[in-house]
View 1 (cartoon, each protein chain N blue to C red):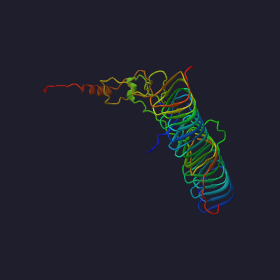
View 2 (cartoon, helix red, strand yellow):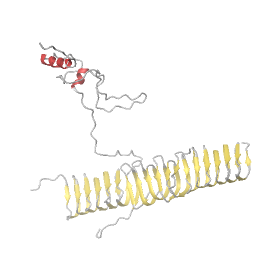
View 3 (spheres, each protein chain N blue to C red):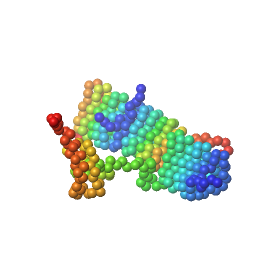
View 4 (cartoon, rainbow over the protein chains, first blue to last red):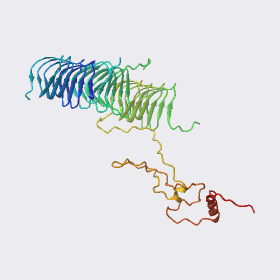
Length: 104
Length: 112
Length: 212
């Protein structure tokens, strides 16, 4: 389980950099760059460019996503932006608008 | 309903503005501006280079910036801080390192 | 004639205006306006008022201080203390509830953190070995030093009781000269001691004697 949890009443306007898993339940505007996995939960609102190893999205994301391993759009998520990753999974019920590039 | 505390892990760095309610536990690094309605707890590995506004602040790590609290600011024995503290109650434990201003209301009797 | 005091006390109704200096502790229940320079401790009691520049070894403030304090050792503002002024010392302690308005300077923050001073707790030493231990020549005598934590092996308890054969009970202390080093030949026991010890062993056996 992730060590860092951005709770759902937290608003961060800026840049998050880290070497561990991150769970976002709140609002993040700016940029997220991780060496591990990012979990964007249903209550999250992310207006940021994302650069991580894995991303699992159940919330709302507006921004470009780059992952070195996998991006998973889970049911009920809303993603607007380009995704670039070698593996992508878009679940039933996910909303997505953007380009997909799997040729990494 | 109490919010579960938000924890910023040891390898996380945040540059920017952070605001919210609920407790925030910082083990990593935050630069910029923090505005909280409840408690900010900076653990020994935590480092905050920011202006802080909060209800309570407990410092075990490093702070470089001003703290403005509604209730209490505590610098525990492993704390290091440079900056000004404005709060109705301030506690500095033996071993804490601090340089800056303490701004509290100090009621004085007449004639002083 | 009052005997020489160990420290100076300024009583609650006393007001001193001027420069105070000295090489002893000073406790203020009244009021001092001016300057205070001590090579020892200044204590401002709850009723005390000091409106002065203060230079001391240590200052403990439970009352009111208006002025700057410089201490070579520490400054402590207790829960009833109120300070308006700048404080400068390598160690500063401010209790929750104290009221302080001023600059705080602990000097070089890169310098090693001063060790927290509490009244030294007496070192716990295990009981001195009993005289019986000298007789039974234990494998290792307990040492008063706490054992260092071994890094690469299971910790072995150093302070073990002397290892004693299971079947023996010590019912009587033997008069042994403790100044003799362990391993030295025991002095010959007096016949009375021998008889006493032998009698103890015999107690375990049931002796049936027919009445003549």
